[in-house]
Image (cartoon, rainbow, N blue to C red; front, top):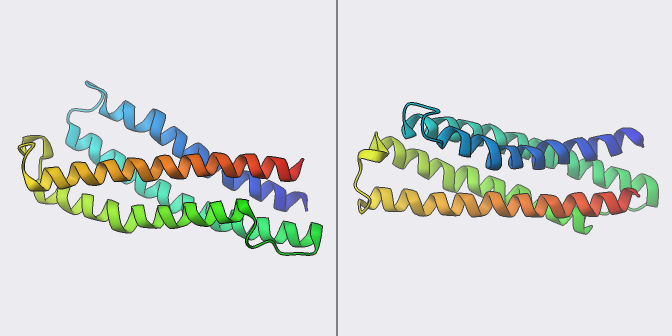
Length: 160
């Protein structure tokens, strides 16, 4: 039982903490003037880091869902597949998958097509689309973070 609770908490800490670290430390740091020689390189670092974060999040989400359902079945005799905390985890997983395969892949394609994005005019359709997708990517990651905080609250309440 305590191992399942450990897995619940570890998966949340890794996923939500990873998102917070990425959003508040990694991205602002690599785009800060003077840290890296170009915004293109900063974008490559952020893109690679976000890809790793997404895969890590998917693994953590699966571990959380499995652990949560198993822990509930052991403690209550009922596998609460549709408990609020699990529904939020499923939403986080779906949003992460959408961000990975619909948003990030298109952004990478556009960035590769533009070569050096800073040399492309702001009204170029590729850059306009890239900026629009970047806004959606940021919104999705922010939503996953907020949902993750809600899962932390629900999990803490359940385990207390």
